[in-house]
Image 1 (cartoon, rainbow, N blue to C red):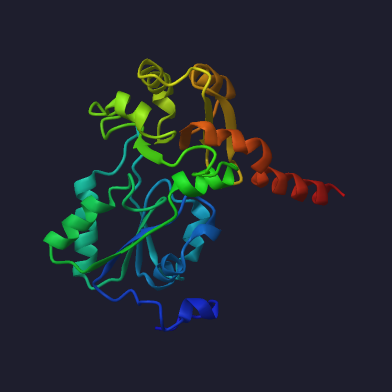
Image 2 (image 1 turned 135 degrees about the horizontal axis):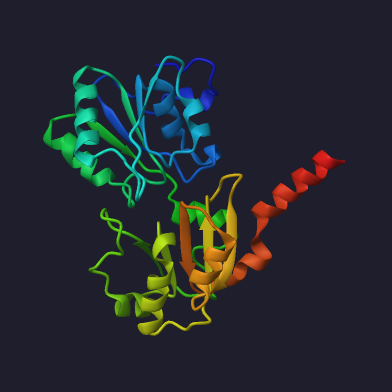
Length: 277
């Protein structure tokens, strides 16, 4: 199927088609539309219906084809939001109508995105589906903050951790001692509201209070803000800075590279300087 008015790459025969009756569980990346994969852009260009999460950047929806139905299925902590079972049921019902469905999820659909739950529901209902990976915030957000996810001088492992459960609390089954010992770099998703407890648990488990911490708010978007602080001061500093969710919390020596690698802000400053000249 040829996509009208789109670059030749999106019409390449090597790319799969989103067929009627199928659901593509598609990662939208952390915000910047440029981080969409070719396959994600193709899904949006072909879908009859786009079922999207609250964390999907509005600019990405402009990639949907003219006439496509856009359905918000947002889930935000502490706010009224769609029930997960209802979302899965909607996907099944849309596919049963022989529609081409793009299920658009922020970041990567299967990394704290409940893509696995939705895939299981589709599989059990006999609905054909494809999982389209996306750039997760723990990679893209760190890159835009000038923090390399790994570096030979800062340790050989990184751990991604959810900052809250479906009920809104810090996961009760986390082995804080193992986390503190297990990886030099820790990245907490959706952790802003529990930053104080997370910091306290890590310090009790042995992480140093002066260990560098970065809080990245609205990563990869024009509203991105990055706070660099320490584990002991993180909660107070984040509160004083009035950072808004969604936010990542990064703990470890990799944060120290930001001083030299904060390229995203430099681009913004360059654009601002050019516009003022």
